[in-house]
Image 1 (tube, rainbow, N blue to C red):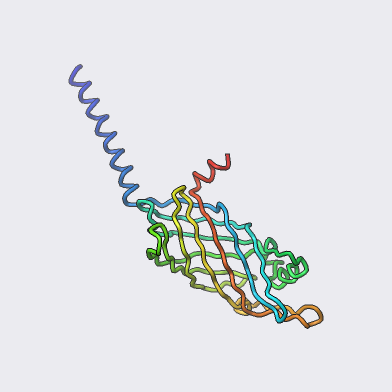
Image 2: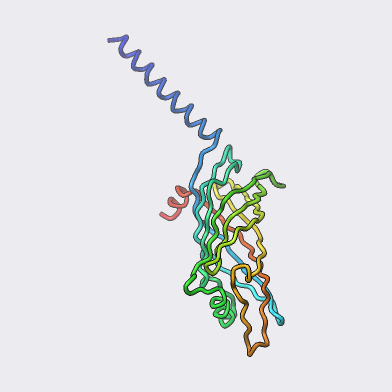
Length: 210
């Protein structure tokens, strides 16, 4: 009986040590984790022959699969975000309606970005990274491959933020800038998109919602 007890204790000890070994390997070698949108803002801006215009929204759907190793960003396995066109707004509701029609919010009510690949390089701060990303951007139902530089920041509370700027031409997406005010106001083909998106691990986000 005594030998059986010792054998059992030995077996439990091996199971416990094996568990610790596996857990430490996940931490050291990195684990893919699902992140979801937590907070942020997307700003779309351009200009006319009379003034500059700017529209913003914080209504963003975003989800990512990211691998960290010792709190260092190693791999972006997947990332996508969606912006409802009619959520883009400014203090000028008249110009908003024109912009929404120009972007063909019906039937193409959303703007999509789908990540393809990236190169990740350390940036100025030890928790920041330059992400040279490639992906597919869909506007008004037309999809184009794009490249853009992002600054990723890993925050101690588990949040990861992505900030960047992307310049585009509306005509690339078969969008024709509309003339308004009897043709006296002409909108430029050039548009700039600035964004900051904060993502939290899905488990943390679910816990904070409760």
